[in-house]
Image 1: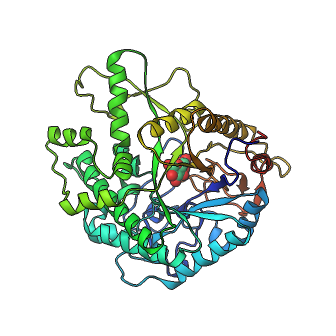
Image 2: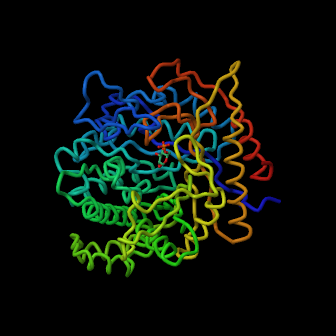
Image 3: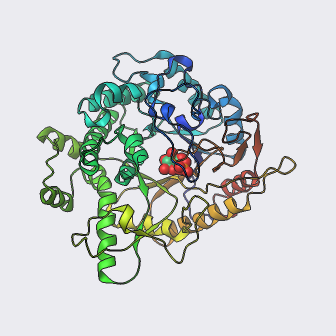
Amino acid sequence: MSILKKDFLWGGAVAAHQFEGGWKDGGKGISVADIMTAGSATANRNITDGVVEGKNYPNHEAIDFYHNYKEDIKLFAEMGFKCFRTSIAWTRIFPNGDEKVPNEEGLKFYDELFDECLKYNIEPIVTLSHFELPYYLIKKYGGWRNRKMIDFFVNFADVCFKRFENKVKYWMTFNEINNQTGYNNEFCLFTNSGIKVQKGENAEKEMYQAAHYELVASAIAVQHAHKINKDLQIGCMIAMVPLYPLDSKPTNIMMAQKAMQKRYWFANVHVDGEYPTFMKAFFAKKGYVPDITTADLMNLKNGTVDYLGFSYYMSKTVKATTDNPDYEYDDLTNDVQNPFLKASEWGWSVDPEGLRYGMNWFNDRFHLPQFIVENGFGSRDVVEDGKIHDDYRIDYLRQHIVEMKKAVEEDGIDLLGYTPWSAIDIVSAGTGQMEKRYGFIYVDKDDEGKGTLKRLRKDSFYWYKKVIESNGQEL
Ligand code: BG6
């Protein structure tokens, strides 16, 4: 007998902007992803001022799921997916973001997509905001710097909940909302909140304000969803990257603890409905006075999430520095290499036990069901005679599933499901590459955007099919 629930949600995950393509089809507006060029393992993506002629924007076509969704979902069904996590591109529903009336063609696309999934008994799991906010909202309102964004987001959420209440039960509000603590890298704050920090601005301060508005928007959306249909389950989505101390030196332990607080207070607010004491003390010490109203605090309290969705790819390790007696975590100065872990070509450490550690860390604090909505290994793949022998990917996933099962069996964690990243090869969010592949299905397209878009089953496709069939017994 498997230790996982009988109805455990095995599946795969993607995000609209990384795989749909059809960036102008069906009345879609321009999103933040549409103005990001391709980068590489060593060079960042550029964020251009609008779409600039002649530049390579990999998300415009992506893998053209928009025109291929029936074939792709059929392949997911062949693998035995019980669920499929994707996002709704905000700009398909509200091309600019501030309209009152939604774009019917966009809604119709998701109706058909979800129906196609349901035809195979694949349950759609949906993220509302996954690094794809309307570019117009940035130009006109300054993105999440602006309180008005709360209304725009809530309107978008309401439209989606009402339209799809009978097709989608599990939702998430903001993908990896805590990613923006990496504000030293402009990608993080821009993709989460649509903010490009200007000279003289304090990125950290901007981040706390934007995050507050997002948390309030999320909490209002949760309340509305429950009113629309009490069966809807609304989760948060946190990027779990455990931060370990380099060694047992007390200052390093303290640094790791403060770093964890800085990265994960978002979950406290989502789950407990209030700011933890350490955040209030931090704001006071820094002299930050974010715009937080009494009504906001009420909304946070009344809109706590139903489950904790999270991604897990890697852990990081930190070390204190003598010039930082307050242990203010800064990834540029405090992150160090973990001597015990190997890393991928892109520098992402491989640490299966970190998954179990992260699940326990959450479970010790937040007593909610968990959902692993991303976990995977980005790697180049080689096609030989139409076959892809991706044993490295199988190894990675196998080791993580082993730890996930221990977290359920030995630590008693209530786990709803597991949707590895990614169901199929897609454009990398961080680098814009196709060659940083995560999928069970290979897509013939390279970093220059060339290829036939043909789909091929990798070895991991057949392996994962068995894993699902055996409910995680056959690894
Ligand atoms: C998560 C995101 O950060 O990691 C995904 O939610 C992303 O959108 C995934 O694709 C993997 O990151 P990357 O940069 O390798 O695509």
